Length: 86
Image 1 (cartoon, rainbow, N blue to C red):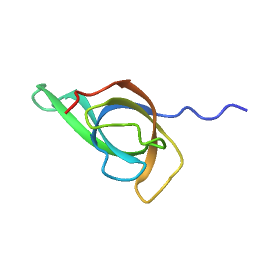
Image 2: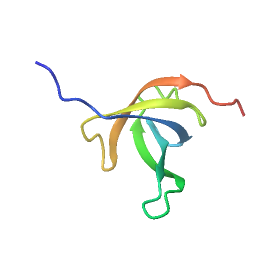
Image 3: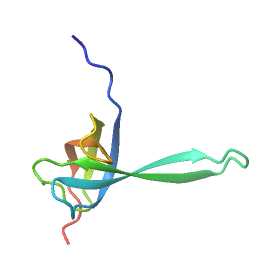
Image 4: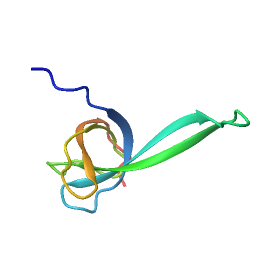
């Protein structure tokens, strides 16, 4: 049986201070409704990172999943590119 289509987003890890959880910032560019100027909108998601492999600055793909905690409904599926080593 086929599961429903899950939403996926690509963003940058901005925090990995929590255990098995990362905060991912997803940016999207949209036109202003009144003036038409292109503006960048950003939203942050808390995502489950089982192996604790993500570092700050990594570009990752996250997918929707069942609720894992009070505000965690996404999980990291893959790291697209590593961030700059600090």
